[in-house]
Length: 214
Image 1 (tube, rainbow, N blue to C red):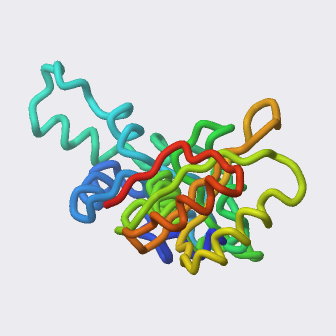
Image 2: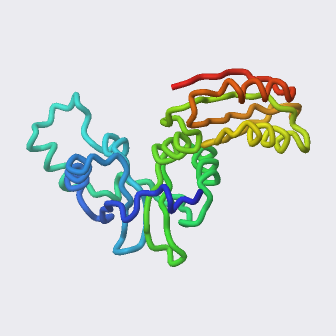
């Protein structure tokens, strides 16, 4: 799965010299929390709702509404934005973007093409949606969690058991234990009748940790 399949294409942007007032209006109108910042067509940063809060007068201020609005109209996006932002290409793998965001503790990445032109933005919400889809969390059917030994041939053995049962697997994921001894395999099937599959899996020597139907 690639970033281009999950990113928001052609996102709303704001120019670096725009006022904080204009930024707040755009965020409020479009329901945005993160906006790429451009200088002409060149990406120069990203600005978030938290950045806006940081440069805005405190709620405990004694300034009048008129004075607050005046200050916000004179402050610019340049004063609030994060500079030197990390970017990714549209063909980057989504898991690599997730690792980068996790390691750098950021909630969004700007997506640029080979000419450094902004083509999209990918956020932590986009990654959550991708995870939900990959695990089939919104699908109805049966979810099986199976423990298998982490050694060659075990996955193909389990696959043969599933194939012989005539069950169609819609989603599959695996997590290897910290000591590499075994792994937990998550399977989803659109069928709610998996008695035959359950029996076949157990007969083949695999341990079923959990079965749930929805």
